[in-house]
Length: 142
Image (cartoon, rainbow, N blue to C red; front, top):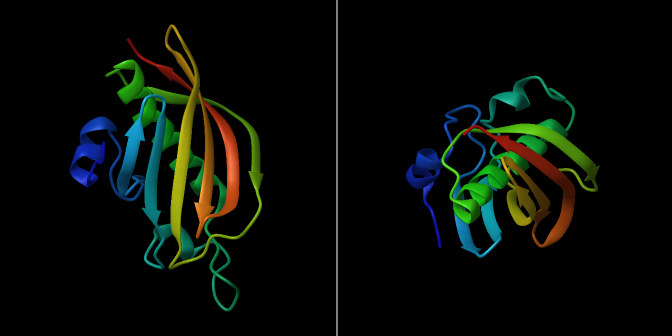
């Protein structure tokens, strides 16, 4: 199942400048692939390694994109409609820089769902090269 930005906004209650998922490319049972277009117009680039240095997407923003993708996947897979809160990030690794002009492809896989807690493994790629990975835990309101 593909989702455009309007469908994504129906699923998660975040808006600019915090909405960091532009499109869901596809999803199937327990898995989802999504896209974040990284542009120089992102507000975090104004203060993160400002010129003359290189513009690099902050790792915290990559983790936030991972959490958003996890919430979309958990909602689709479990049917949860409540708000999901980030309660844990384990094993986060940042292997390559993400810079303006990159397309960040996020691949999420639901590891476990019990009661109101979901654990999701997420990997982020740029041009099919792994740039980051983490295990994200979300708690959902009833």
